Image 1 (cartoon, rainbow, N blue to C red):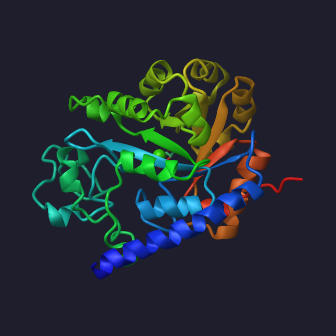
Image 2 (image 1 turned 135 degrees about the horizontal axis):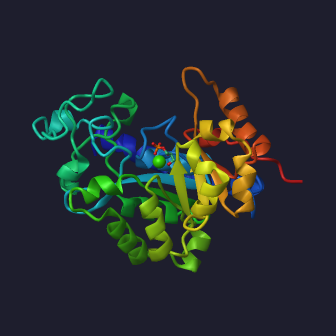
Image 3 (image 1 turned 135 degrees about the vertical axis):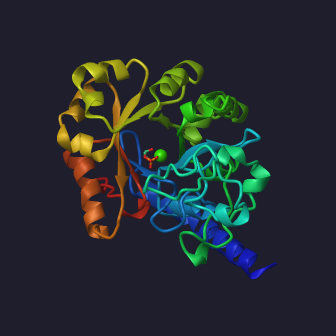
Length: 322
Ligand code: G3P
Ligand code: CA
């Protein structure tokens, strides 16, 4: 076993050994019907590289109710957990496969990113497995590998009570390449039986997307599974628009600034039986841990939202039960 492997195994053992304690703590913290929900955004991504097994395990240790997976599709049609459509931000793809950048997307960073972009869908799973997904975050995480959707399911299902929160990130991007991302996802959910009531009880599942057509499709193809429409648009939380959203989604998830600009939208959505979730709550150079926790408490308790995505699941402010 190489030192790198030893480090990975050690991390696994430590995480597993404290998970049982974390689950007991969650019960003591009073999760139950109607409780506010703590969604680990890309895992515990303030502390470990996003969408790695370490970030997912840590999220569960920290008491997350759900672990989020942003999904992408490899060249050979496998769902992987990756936020971007491309690999260069969170891996060493530019070193391992320097010439495999997209000629189509070259130079489209427009000052917001690197000129060379490596589309995940141009690589097979075997190729992507060669990439280091941790070193960009910190040398401590060198050796982290891509997590497939199947692997994420196995991990989270191993911890009954914790849910999964997949995002169908870019169905139109894949459609333009002749790939039906939603079909691959629906087939996988059915293969694993994740949509069955008995599975939803032990491993809750909520589907999310910014793509309205995809959420509408989920309503038809996976009707038992809750589905949340993500938005950054104030126009999506008007009374009329929320009435429409309620015909195809079970919840709405506006970005924080949309809610602060129209806090009354929470009551409007609740009156239509839509849950309200928001994103993203995190520590950063301007926000320390106390401020992040206070912001979460404000949205949950003062503005009345039901759930939030956070990079810091350990800071989620649970109310003590009487
Ligand atoms: O899915 C909720 C939130 O994660 C949306 O933003 O870009 O982090 O996927 P993003
Ligand atoms: Ca997301």
